[in-house]
Image (cartoon, rainbow, N blue to C red; front, side, top):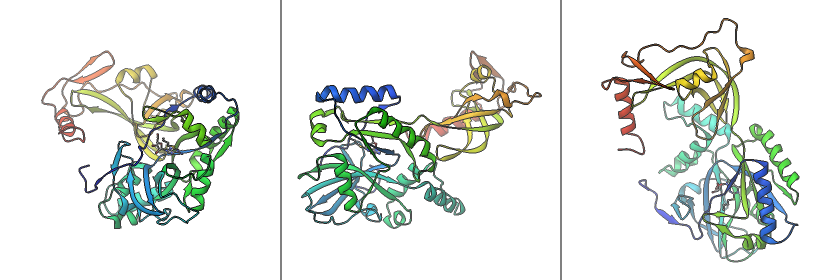
Length: 379
Ligand code: IVH
């Protein structure tokens, strides 16, 4: 791992989820479950998909012995000391009775309010600010000094169990209710239904509530509720076949382009970047958006002072979707780039959609090359 955490092999693998992006794909999934089980009457459970750090809690005879990050799903990092600083995690389970071995799975998250507070504190202290609540949760959880983690207001939301050597309930819903009696916060609000329409209405409802929920979510998860049917349906590759994540489309916002700059890349390509009036979208304040290439500016006729729709999906760089042309002032003029490289002042060549600085000695290119060389995946 490179850090100070030891590697921990999960007793049962932590899998991933297949994604659906449209109602059609969700209907395909629901129909597939009926075909695979040979019954038309299946209860589904739905809950938010929390955008956090997946964690596995291992209980032996009711005592928390290990907590580990998901890692690659087979093994993760042993973060037990850090997890013990969280308030939402039982160290000892109530004897109802409890399975001798139990894995409780969920997400460690930071609420949006705590994320904003943390960044204010970090900024005031001249320390690193985090791009989004998920990065803040990850950074806080992976502190080598658990005393720092303890100051970071992390929460744990449970979304299921892994290995359990004796049954807790017959359905996912019963499992979640049992976890709640053990003091865990279940991913909520929840829904249980046999009807595709009700599940899709739940999705729409959660999507409208999205910005008011205390934490960031990136979709909802539908699961076959019966554990017996789950076993019958089984797994494909690294994901259960009995569950699917219905992802939200990227959040959008309206803002104004205050300027357009050209950024020099290591190959000399000049990427236009829109400077924006800072606007909150998808849980972070966005002040820049990529315009990809000069050809795209021409194609979409993007101008300084234009009102634009911007979009941010997860950690992806924000982008301009379209110009709101109704809001354009009559004196607006098309954007025209300068003839010279903003870094070295050298000549710019244009080839189809791309502008390029051809000067091999360009300070901007050299800077970008060094930045690339020292980046996480290089050197
Ligand atoms: S169920 C077999 N329920 O999403 C995996 N996962 O993309 C079953 N996640 O690794 C996971 N919220 O960490 C489930 N309500 C939820 C979830 C959830 C977030 C994470 C989970 C998983 C990842 C898969």
